[in-house]
Length: 520
Image 1 (cartoon, rainbow, N blue to C red):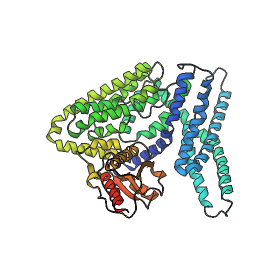
Image 2 (spheres, rainbow, N blue to C red):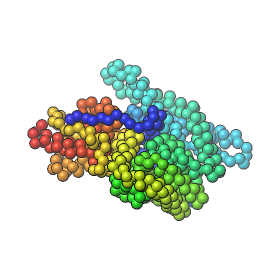
Image 3 (cartoon, rainbow, N blue to C red):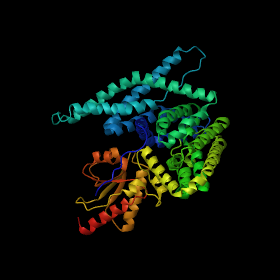
Image 4 (spheres, rainbow, N blue to C red):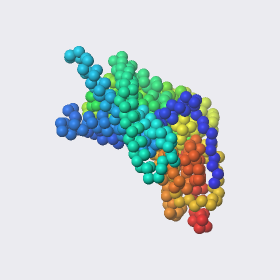
């Protein structure tokens, strides 16, 4: 079976580096969102201003945010780099940073004049995102020094003590330079955000955030800055407006509703379904191609985002914890007590503003677009491809927008399935995080096998970093195939343009069915 690998498209090298950095940060944060949600529930119910204050249960809130969450993030980052061993060393290092930060804050507070405002604890989210991967990477390098040189029978002794000793060293590194560095960074970021709030300039952040979302550059901002700062604010006050800067689904649904009414061709036909996925499912990426096919629409998104932020600033809208994914359901579940009116109004107004401006832009270009309908559909297909290229991986949701009208380069260039001597029993859909789009792709192929009556085939989804020799056939978005092939060089590799409706799935089904019939 041949593989059609398209060259990577997208932005500049700087953009690609920011995307990769954001993806890595997201990979550390997203698996731990359930822990943040659990912490948000504890704060909602049991702190002094919660729904059911409970002094005993409220004691969980502080250690949860100060120790458990940073260590979970560090462990996740460490395992991404060097498996469980890396996760353990990264967690040890982060514990050193937590203790070092507490000592720094205590010393500063002791030196303050009597009656002066005391500094609060600095939660080591950024420290964890530094030390988790760093501790794992350095441990990996150290292990490589004596790899294959340890005498038989001493492997466990060397492995255990080397990890323990290096964990000790990294904890000291975390205690001194990293703790000081992170405290300085958090102080600078907090000062900047407080200044924006005091000067009523926080809505200006939408000028950066909304375009960044469209080009998949927002993860570095969201997970690297907004989430750590928001968690710190929420730990002190019970909620934070920062959780709403990026997660507000209003601008996206406003844009999609404008296309539903005033759009043309494939964009108009697919917009209603995309609006449902974006608003209720929280998959914001489905509206990005609509903005990219007419980049001036980003102005409408910025205006909508600024409207939402302004509304929340004026009326006190805030969330207790991050809303992930950015669904209206997740937003409402995380809304702070007494802030429902503000949050709901901010979503409605941001959607309305984006809708009105988008409608004006679409109406102004409608005559020109009608005269070149085919070009408009091509532009929409190209925008989907550009969005997938910017993301660095394909998406089932984006692929669903493409439908049958325009399959794009990946569909047109699909390679025909050919016979192979390797029996296909384990099929893996692989992407960066191993969730979301790859999970949906796996579901689509499982359904195809079921309809075809093909059994004894396992279809799962994994992160590329977790691929192993058990995979017989690996399906990836075309920009990720080379990375997947490095992980599993002996497997059959198939590149697809989108995970949702690739014609290559039928080829895979035919191949496996033929193998069963031939008794390969």
